[in-house]
Image (tube, rainbow, N blue to C red; front, side, top):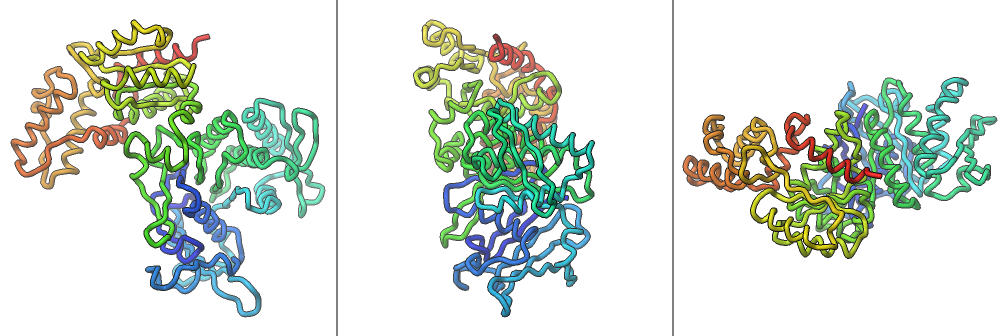
Length: 515
């Protein structure tokens, strides 16, 4: 089971928070400090795992600052496979004791005592969460039957070793099942309880165990993992490895994280990244688009990184002319890896847009002053691109870097869009204008082919815009390249849609992976 929608009313800063954009796999909440990212996860944890909440968890916002009609916290969740629809957790004052007791209602049915029968397990990992409680939740998910237990620990220890590039051994001290401990033997042969290790080691150990459990879990409702800032106390290299493991876990289970680290931003799946912010009254809210504008500029500001910081995160730095390549290349490389045509991992790649060919020479010069790692540069195969390549080839600073100007057979000049399958290109053009123009009638393939005429995309685009202007005089005929690129990205499913780029990406891989 996966979460599809949540409603959080009157819990801390989440006063009127409604969110229905969850993905089945990985979900990433980003935002500056103190906007309420952690409050979202804490509210979910209260729904699944707590019998009551404390008085200080009630929202301090006044009645005129909220829209909902409740006078107490309410947390509601709708799952993709639930017979009851939306389940509501009401947290109301108990006159006999401090705090607010939980009552679960759905379709006028009280499910308080049977909630676990109707929902997946929910594991919440946080620096502030009770480690003992988390360990007990894991114990409840583990079979201590010898063969399965041995397999689970073997896998978990492999994941730990992968994260830290060292030998770690996890095991359970389960002599008392009511007070089970996780112990860890580190590379120095120090055997100690997990709670005595650093917060980064604790987080990595718990995630390693979760991944191992997840890969072997066949329970009917499955489980959901929520992690508050998984990067905590981890070196950049360990963060990268941990993110790869989380992506693996998300293939089978829903994973929800909050983060301040660009390492945990999946460039190939930015549709699963959600910006959390405060509205004008100070309530926690979210935005789906804002951080994706301006070459991810606002994202860097949100999580407090500069271009120098981001360059440290890419083992393989790929510079491109503009936003189209920056948006499409991660998805293309991921498709090629999925089809076993490439070994490159997009999480190891840093895609940097120079925002146009006119700026590339000075942009590259600044980059080379910042880093000593090799660069791969993609240029359009046109007059400006070829002229830039000629200048860079003559400069000693760029010797050893891979500079590519892809040529499309049959075209005098070409840019990245020209390497897309014509059917994909034509379908996306019609879909773009269908979304922009009311009562739009799709252009016929023969009309588009006539306009195409082996022209580079920018010239073809002008022809299409002229055609649209002649038919729909009052419409905005401009084809926005960023919006169009996002539409193409949605439709990219197979390498057959960009067949002529496969050999070029293989050259890039060969360059970066050379010994």
